[in-house]
Image 1 (tube, one colour):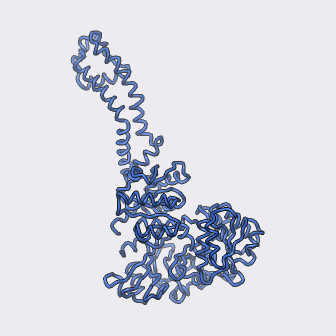
Image 2 (cartoon, rainbow, N blue to C red):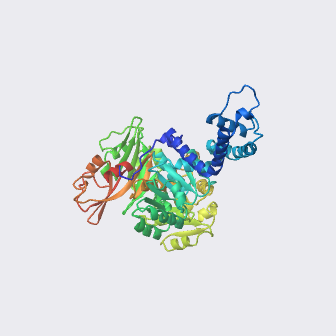
Image 3 (cartoon, rainbow, N blue to C red):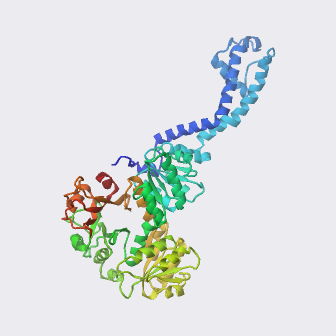
Length: 602
């Protein structure tokens, strides 16, 4: 793996408990912090005991003052003197009062009073804080963060930030979070996942140091504020110029200019990363994720091989079918980028990548007749896509859909309030219609063309509102394709089980694999997750001096575990080139593979 790439950690440790060695180191660090905070009280306690011990050892004559006959403690040793000093502070001393010594009398009064005050207000409090981590959770999180190395720091624990953290720990890597608000809804979730949460402003150097920025391999600035993320990045760049930075931004101009400052593929928009998938799901079916290329959209889709379907024949003729197999899962093993000769069996789960029409053909071929009738693709009679909600996501989806060829009829339903710039921008797009109103009302849906619609995409930022819109459309058109934006994966699964809504996506879950991969190895174009494995795409130039020149597409797959998804040669684009195609100098390719395979390729 590349230098600077974090090493996977034990998932059990990250998800369930901290290792014993990590806890020991954190406790030592925490002990040092407490010593620093309580040194005056502790020093006072030590000084009181030192003075008392020296007086009893050298200034107190037990043979003279002790009224108990038969004692044999003349003189007292250092250990005995310290012991008697401690007893004196608890009013349990057996020593006689030094009536003939003014210094001794003063000490016999001062030591118990001062000692008790120091014990109860300082020493006992120090011990309680040292043992009771729950009462000082913020300081304990800093102590835990001090034990991390080669980790990813995620700034901002909102939806995108939390998804990125979850993606990291699912893939077996370690993360530390910086969050300004301890009461944030995702803080408890991060703590339960055994991810340290450092409270503070990520623009401040002290907060970054507490999160271990000097030992980290990357920082993800995932706050929902473009300017704040830029400030975080500039602060880090000032004292760690080479640290890998990943920024979440929305503004396209910022995206372009930031990459000139912080490096290629360093700034990403969550809505821009998610929009192609929403758009593809609104014009097709059974899409899990979409990779946008220079020529068209490449869909990622999973299907379970049916005993009665004909998809097996298509899969063995991938070159003609317009898709490739990324992964085959069976009860015994998982095979990545299998050869065309791989035998498929009913029950195998196959992950495909291909154009939308190719994926639709595969899905239809895998169904029996009754199911296939219910999965008919978009047609001239059913060509309208209704977009509900014109926020950051809705706006991006409209733009993405407007670029599709052939383009569907696009109708946007929006409320009269909201941001004014998005309606102005879509008004410049030819053929995009707008309906003002509440998409939960049937009259508004009918005005948008529900009767002839292929799909309704509910893309507001409110999960409940999106569900209400979907159910309203389903009441009139039970067979209509519904695309729903949600945050919770659990809710997405329930929508499929209860309401039959299978195209439910979370913007943050669609975007987080790319942010995660960019933080881990940098330079990636897009990322997506299959189970706990991260897949990424990256652009490579074929030169006379690298390992790609002279290799066929199939040899690239066999040698590096990478799939050539796009080949640009002399200005001509080939999408999913044939296995026999040989790469030559000056070709430009986009390769897809696991994050480990891409790192090895570099």
